[in-house]
Image 1: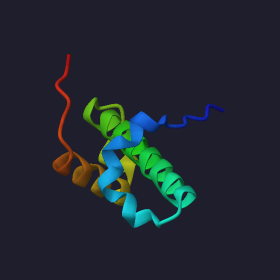
Image 2 (image 1 turned 45 degrees about the vertical axis):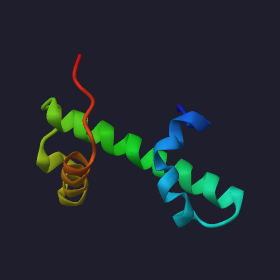
Image 3 (image 1 turned 90 degrees about the vertical axis):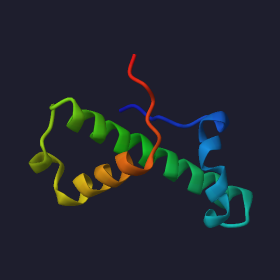
Image 4 (image 1 turned 180 degrees about the vertical axis):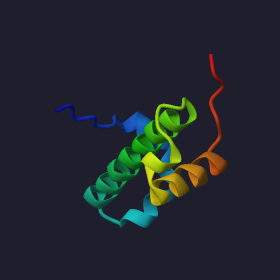
Length: 80
């Protein structure tokens, strides 16, 4: 098992949403960690889908819709 934990500089992108997680530091930190994990997992699913490693059937309707929404709303990094 591998545990991936974000560093503070990796969660700076969700700073505008910090108020949604509460007012206490521990609540904000926990919310930011959950949001970061969600973003990482959706990126993995989206990359697998785009590289034809999985199909829409394998992702399921719910995850496929989240990947579609994620890809349409997020800025894209250029491929190297």
